[in-house]
Amino acid sequence: MSDAAQARILKNYLTDHGRSLLHFPAVEPRIEDGPALSLQRCAKCHSDSGDHGPLHRVHGPSIRALLDHGFMPPKGALTAEERSALLVWLEGK
Ligand code: HEC
Image 1 (cartoon, helix red, strand yellow):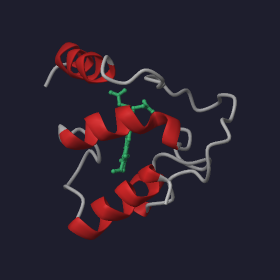
Image 2: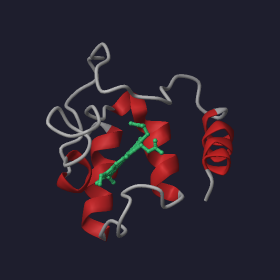
Image 3: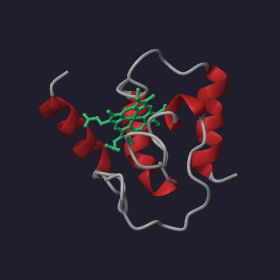
Image 4: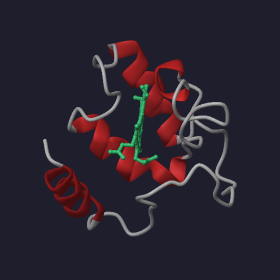
């Protein structure tokens, strides 16, 4: 899948969601919307100690789009348990 195709999928997806962030630099102002995603399958790359900054719920639409289209995690799909833990976190419950 090319970057252009990935960008198009994200753009289409994000037009349905008013408020979201698409690009997340490692250092960005923290948004107080609850705890960062701690799921190990994601946090090993997306966390303060990872190559990418932590993921927050404000990133939800991008997280869902990349998850649904199989871009994240880069290797191996989440188990049903991991996926439901991620969705519970996204819902903020
Ligand atoms: C092995 C490391 C790795 C793991 C594990 C991983 N990611 Fe990523 N993620 C990346 C990389 C690298 C990019 C940037 C991709 C690009 O620029 O094309 C990225 C990009 C993203 C983005 C787009 C915003 C950004 O930071 O660039 C989101 C959202 C995301 N990942 C969510 C997840 C979620 C959710 C999981 C767990 C289900 C996950 N990732 C697991 C490496 C990882």
